[in-house]
Image (cartoon, rainbow, N blue to C red; front, side, top):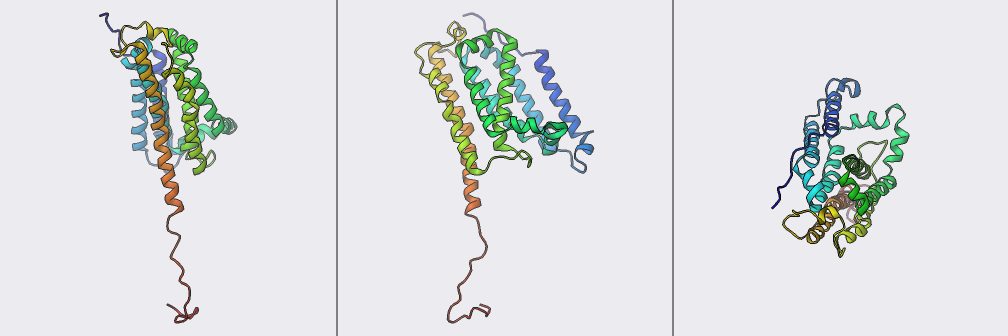
Length: 278
């Protein structure tokens, strides 16, 4: 059996991008904190989560998973994409304090651009379009064979995923999250619009991507069976990523609506005049 070519990525663009994010976050949380948010303590938990997310991004992009995805396995590539879109992107939003996000998104005349890019409709359409377009065989194969295009693909996944998650997770009053009912509709529709892509991959009667059709190692499976598995992982990942927040939002909304409304009023009776204490 031929040897698997797997390794850890040392691409300067990848490492430089992650290092830049780490340094900028560290400067904002440390030396610049007094200027950005006077009196705010160092966000230890948020910083730990942010740097953990950067490490996770490197595992998705720089570990042997990258070589598996690029050369041998559609399933590995699907795990890579879902990890970026459904794990790393929301984690970056959750671990960046609002006092960092406000100048980043609203300072220096950036408010207008942010309001457009982070609008729910724009985020929904951009994410859904890129998610589907990158799985078109010609585009997908082009990314596998061109490292620059492949990096651009993953940057697009991350950016459009951040745009998609923002209306669900925002903590900024100036760029607020959607109301409960609209968040539920948003989460319901996201996996619905992915059905054509899921169906095309899962139920195709042939292997869609020549790279994997010719790969000697596809998890020990026939390439077509591995493609079906990748499609199932795509759909299952989407249902979990959107279904869990859907349930959480629904039950929180229910709890808010059915919460205590104050002590019940007791109607006066013949034995207790309306003006007398009970």
